[in-house]
Image 1: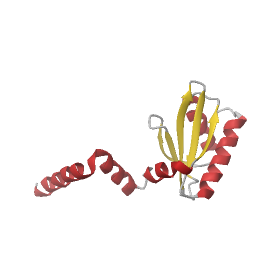
Image 2: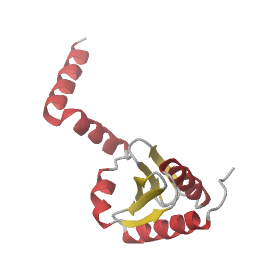
Image 3: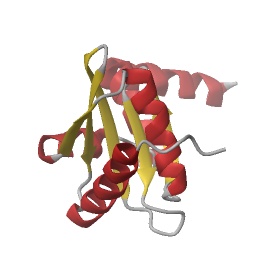
Image 4: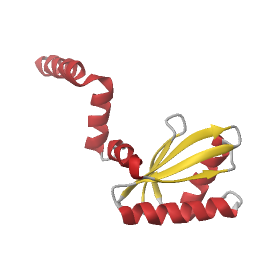
Length: 137
């Protein structure tokens, strides 16, 4: 019983110091799925506009990443992100961010702390999206 009370006090302390978002990010970092660094690297992202509505751009990007054999570790259409590792064996994180420009155009940004991974994923993803390939089944 004392252990549970102690854990509740620690949790309340963390919430008061870090807030919910900080605690969530700390837990994500502990699990190895934090996207904070990818968001910070976004200022140097490789970006391109595509003539797809937001949902289509997001869906086609997931299909393209599957074709590229990237490992998706986080996808959240409401947060406008897909976070991947380059592959199952190369765990360099890369973030793909989506921004609806208008109803028929979506901006896609590829960010990573690794310029090699960023270039590799951006080139492959953008080439597949420009080819307008059908979805992977």
